[in-house]
Amino acid sequence: MDGKIHTPRKHLSRGLEILYEDRDLLVIDKPAGLLTVGTKDHKIKTAEYILTDYVRKGVLKSRKRIFVVHRLDQWTSGVMLFAKTEEAMGLLKARWRDTEKKYIAVVHGHPAKREGVITSYLAEDKAYDVYSTTDAAKGRLARTAYKVMKETKRFSLLEIRLLTGRKNQIRVHLADEGHPIVGDRKYGKINDGYERLALHSQTISFKHPATGEPMTFESKVPNYFFKLIGNTQGCS
Image: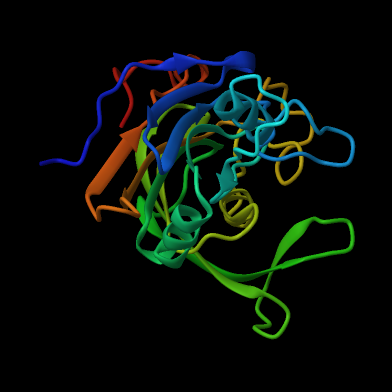
């Protein structure tokens, strides 16, 4: 079998959708703007909170909970994986290196190479900004593979595969190359005039923690991306 699961979408609050659910997993489509987990200032308007409320079915005293397997930045949209048991979370994290994650991004300009791998060590400063360094003692190795899918006069559409999973990795690496993601106010052009970060988690592939079955889930590309790159006609 191809590992793809087709299940009716469940629409929850704040634009979050459940793509698949069983007793071990929740796979969601996260909208841009929604935090994955709570912060000191934002504890309720998060994917974790919404999904916890969902599995508890409104019973405040319920001990049911969901477990965070990985995170997406607040303004990154797309497919995400959560566990419904601590055991499932542990198994998914143990196999995380074998999990395949594909993203798409619209960046400023045109990369000199049509495809390649960006490599650096990523570190974080006291302001929680991530930066690249050549010093292995200061950072953690990060590798990002990219391929140019389309080009317009101003932008390029990239397919991106994470070879490692570090905080803000894609955003920092593309900015390092001189091609920041459209709408990236932290690592890119502060006032580029675009409404959101043009980064989308398109697919995730992994083995089910209980059955070992290969599974692949895909999130539809937001219309925002088509507004930036237009249709395929005239794109290389």
